[in-house]
Structure formats: structure tokens, C-alpha cells
Amino acid sequence: MTLAQTQQELISEFAMFSDWQDRYEHLIELGKDLPLIAPEHKVDDNLVRGCQSRVWLHASPRNGHIHFTADSDAMITKGIVALLVRVFNDRTPQEILGASTEFIDRIGLRAHLSPNRANGLSAMIDQMKRYALAYSAKP
Image 1 (cartoon, helix red, strand yellow):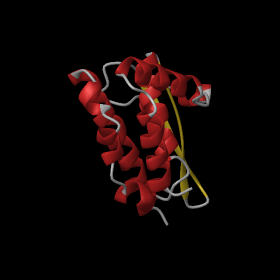
Image 2: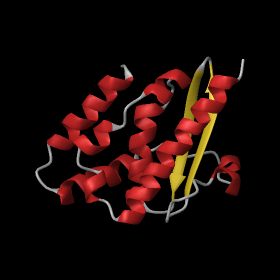
Image 3: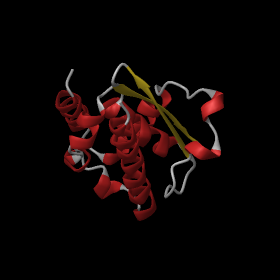
Image 4: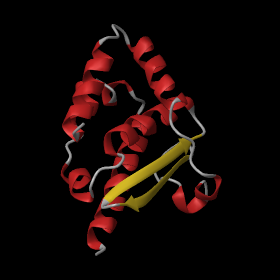
């Protein structure tokens, strides 16, 4: 599935819910399904700066793609990072760097986050794109 198809799938998923309480519950469920980050990667160096909650994000190269693992100590934040991992995981650095994040606005997520959580969301996206930039520079 392409990155754009994954984003469209998420837009369709969130459209099934009529109110934001149900959408938050879906976000929490996505967080529960997030594969656990290895304990050795749950370190301060992998904390996303700019998040109110603690969010660990680890990236590693795999056959020209970037594999992400993540975790958070807050349920909604864990759901948000799970959403991003679902979109960006196992993509090439170029796909990640060129990707639009318009799907976040199309599902209405950014509009329904507190300013602190919205800043955290931006920080997570920025960190994933920084990893992509770093891996795109490596031969």
C-alpha cells in the first residue's frame, strides 16, 4: 500500500465516527495496537522534544526504508504517534520527506487537539522527517 493509500485509509476510518469522542477512542485503540519499542530504545536520546507527554521514537534503516518504533506515557499521544508510525513506517526517506501531512487536517485531528498536543504532533512529524533526512544523506 502506498503512503497516499494509507493516508486515505485513515481518512476513511475516521470518517466512520460521527463525533470526536468516538474518534478519540479509535485513536486510543490505535495506540494499544502500536508494537512496543524495544527497551534499549526507550531512552532519553529517543525522546521527542516539544511534546508535553513523554514520546520515544526510534528509527532504523531496513533495505533502503526507515523502520519506526515508538511509545508514549499518555494514551491519546500514543495513539497519535501510532497514527504517524502507520503512515511513515517502512517508507523510503524520499517518500517521508515528500509526504504531505494534510490527512491530519482532513480527519480533523489538529483542530481537536489542545495547543500543547498540537505542538507535540508537529514535533513528532518533524522528528520523523529529520530521521528521513539523516538516512537520505547516508550512502
